Length: 158
Length: 111
View 1 (cartoon, rainbow over the protein chains, first blue to last red):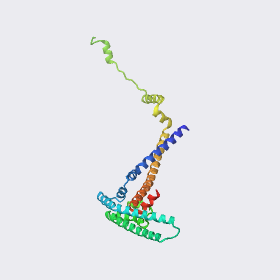
View 2: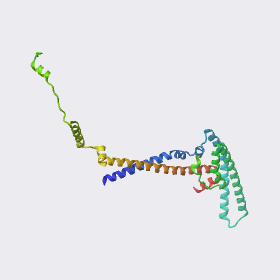
View 3: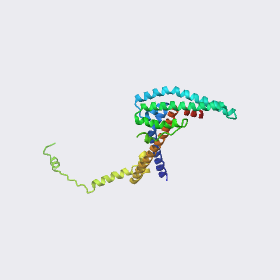
View 4: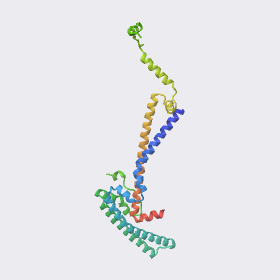
């Protein structure tokens, strides 16, 4: 009985050690990528970008970032004002109407800027990768503000 | 010593023709084996011979180890693939957040 217990425990330990080792080895590249706090590292790996293409995308991203921050600020300000009005007023007011129109304008501006940036980045990539990149970010333009799942990895490496 | 010593002559003429028993070699090896088996095995070797007392037990242990390693490696790789897919989705979201100002506002206000 004691012998059987030792054999079972040894088999479980061996299985667990193998599982752990294989899991760690299989996830090494992704963990290394996630540990780098730079989303462009992921982009370069996911879309197989060359160093030159990566550099060009970084430039585009740097140019887009301040515009994106400005839009963020506009969205936050508009939302905060609307939030305050909805809380303090008890009926629909012309000011609310103006803020809603501003909100729609901001959304048009955001989506336009986003789409322009996405097309610019896609143009740097090889055609099939660019198409895949647009596919990945299409939902972000159609439904901004919502996290969307990326297409399956199998499709990603065709 | 005299060269014509009769003892020397007799020694020179003496011939020995030993006869080896039929099972001599087999008996020697049998005795060696008996001695080795009688010797008490200690340490790891002793533990392993206690754990797997026969050749069949060794074979079963080897097959079990191979199966356990294969199952562990398979599950590790499958789960690793799923974990990679989750990480990929997180990284894609992180990138989308850097592009979509609405997502930045949504996620920063959710924190």
